[in-house]
Image (cartoon, rainbow, N blue to C red; front, top):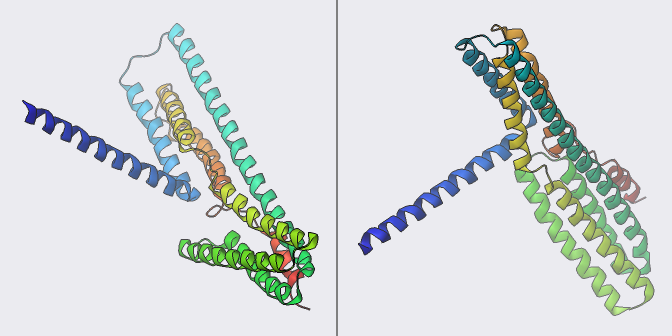
Length: 282
């Protein structure tokens, strides 16, 4: 019987492996839709409207509610809609908090670059001139990071950013070692702030609303539309559209704010634009 046990274990491992791949693929598709808020709005609206229609179909096959049952049903629908409203409100708050953080970090990054640019005068003239050229190039790359929507271009930007960061640190560290002083240490500290600011910004752009929160909110929304459709007296198309449309618009707004690169509401690098203009050679 040993061979049967071995076969059984291999089948179990294979099933778990395939389930993991399916789960991962489903999450990847969900992330892809969330990164395209307009597509997310269309998909959400159609699914929620479908849930309302399913409720109306189920209702047509049942007898009329009694007075007591309708009262209890109204309480359930009200509680479900209240829960949905709270979830949408909390999720919207999460999205706006992340959006404000990205705006703040853009300002801090511009300030760090501008401060370091002035501190480069503490270094030898040859190193200072080279570092100023590199910082101007670096500022241009940071602006492109905020404005690009193309994934291939983003990969090129990240590769060039890493390369220039390495050159910046190597140059400022070499200059500080050759002429160690409190002023050169200040310039080195400022360069460290510049590099850290980019890391904080990247972390903030990766910090999105958890997928589990989206799934939970969608399930509550689908249940609310199902209950609403089930409670309708007749198949009224206009009424069945109102709640799915309202909820889908709310989801679209949250997804749009939470999507820093694909959304309509995006972070404009105004501080970096102003900095780039001020750093241009006279």
